[in-house]
Image 1 (cartoon, rainbow over the protein chains, first blue to last red):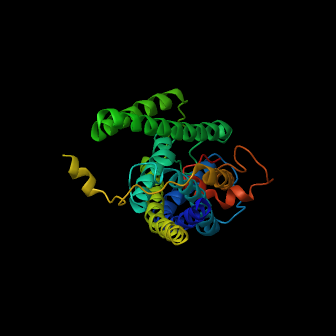
Image 2: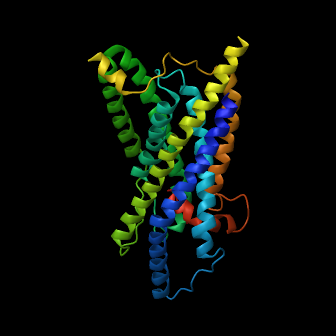
Image 3: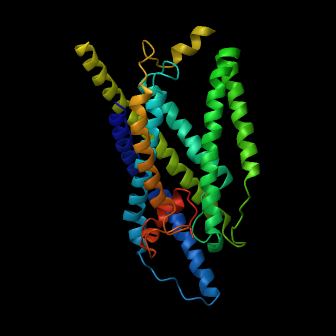
Length: 244
Length: 73
């Protein structure tokens, strides 16, 4: 059963990524192009030769973007399915569809929104090449810590619900989640490398598009995976009944 | 007060059977390794660390890397 759920999770992730690609293509790519134009103008003003194009812009903006999105969607679709398989039947009495939607929201919060509040997505020309090692390390650390904060809050939340009742328990667990997130984010180094004259509107629109792409991805992942998981679980249930 | 919450959320008729941990763990390990590998190639290869020489992988997934929120350049 776990293997079938994993396969369906990755399939749902790939389909969701195709929708996210369309969103990113329409809303994200214009901002990427503006940022690259800014970079080219700045380099030209400094008398530097333009960077050689190893992969053409149209390739990056089409098949490159689609490939990246699909790999990302398959990866998080797999993680999502494993968490679903673990939570199903252990977290309340939610149906497969409702649980899938709830977990998609939690996944977006844990893997995207909380890390992005500390280290937001940046368009080309924002970020110094010299600090790529530090930026990559702190970004992945932030994701790992975000997962830990979510896990601690959920486990504590289950205790709190038993002691304080459902409403008060969930509110207290949410408060704990906010406090732990703030502590973790204060503990990690700040990185601010936006060039002084970089257009604020392009930065804002780029980040809107990046977050929007993730909302499409995670929303579609939850909605597509729910029915797929339901049929997988139902067929195994009926088989068990026939056998037993 | 107790009834209002449970009626607004679709719940299974009975608590569904959980998948036993023993059946779950091998698939979880396999899935997490596969996912980590995929995320590595989208998010970090030929950036901070590099297994394949050159810049072709980085340049091909360049736009995705930026828009998906990974550090780039």
